[in-house]
Image (cartoon, rainbow over all chains, first blue to last red; front, side, top):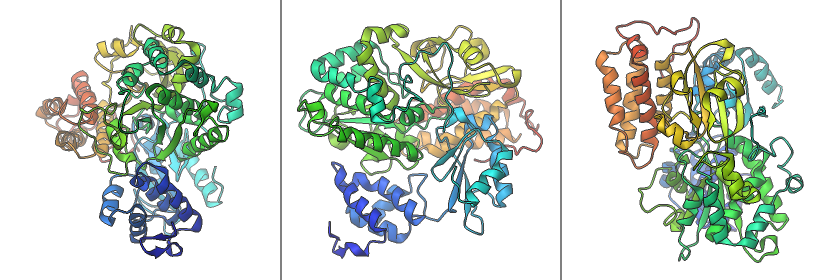
Length: 171
Length: 438
């Protein structure tokens, strides 16, 4: 695909690697539209949120309207229209995690970061949100920082975990 | 990395390669991998389906439908392409078994998908993982690429002349997409709302073609059924409940973890022996036997309860996804009910009014109740409301919210009454925020 609905590919808002990945992705399925949900998530991973420009380019690449893209994007809880912090902390508080102290962990994150639910720290480094079950029930309480899982957390481990991210060490 | 556990009572079939490096294709082959699919190529589709039926392997997603029967419903002749769709949207609270399968044994999912394809005459399989499982998707994608490199996938698999392609897919956060028709919608690039049945997916499914949708654990079990033989697999379990299950023990239990136990294993023994008992030597208050949507059971109800689909059904609950959530006597059931229903209110896709409005109403009632502002009539209203959600929605999410609510209210009425008339929650702990809004 050398152009997207008349626009040369070089005008893509995505990195060349991601643009190339998307070129392949739309060809992968029996129907082009099947690429929509993955494309939105991968675009968000790179851009930070689903900006107007992301929605516009994804709509063009799939060949549907921007309204249709928004209609789908608003359904999925991981997709967002406002940027989160560089490290988005998602604390599972569902039943298995709740029983093992997830709310205490969630509180501690908020205290350490000085922001409330869905808040972003002023340096843009961290954001925090409460999420539904992340599939780590037997290793509860569990949180995800972006896509990384942290299992069996106690409130007292929170400061050190944050420090590791501040220093750029993922795990 | 999730902690692996073990217990002498375990019968390792699906989990036999966990922790052994089988995510690498050479190791998987060393451990007997891709032998089952070769056997299936030699034996042909009718034999595969008969073996699957005879194995009594029932769907591990929660519904417990016979996998062999499901496969046999796919029409032999079809004008449209047929598909296999592996459901790895694992999102039922209490359930994390597929997490370990994708992490430790991704090739078993691939091999099972190919076998399902051979059985029903599909040439394409999709493996759909929930969006949160990105690191597991990367493991799956690596495994699929390796299988292509070896010629185990592609135009001429194992040199047999047969064709099979696998496409991996990520979700982006939605419990509802674990329902099979919503899963197809999501894979087609739409909002994950359910489709009306009939037609069933085996007749009209993905892109309008006949589609087999199986849970990831079911699919990962298939190669083992073929290798062991259906009779040997069935013999591990109880009548009509073949084999083993990955049970996820979580909550107030000393040794939480995913344990593979024979179907029919006693629930009390599972909690007290396998799981090491209730945490801190406390008393058992209740147990959710198969993920958050299954009605809660009391200690006296689990004395002689074998964990298979039929026995748990007879006890008034469901085996569901095998997620056993243990609740100790220091837990407020009203709070637990509130957290459960908040989840369903959040995840209701909004398509069917009884579910969309019912879950929200139940949540609001429980918030008020837990805060001490409930009325006696609210207790009956919650039950009445939940009972009227049952069976009135396209998909089972409405039931999934209603069934546990009915059980909480019926079995713990006294505890609901203890929250009446402005009384503080009897279980509120100092310094811990009282759960009000999620």
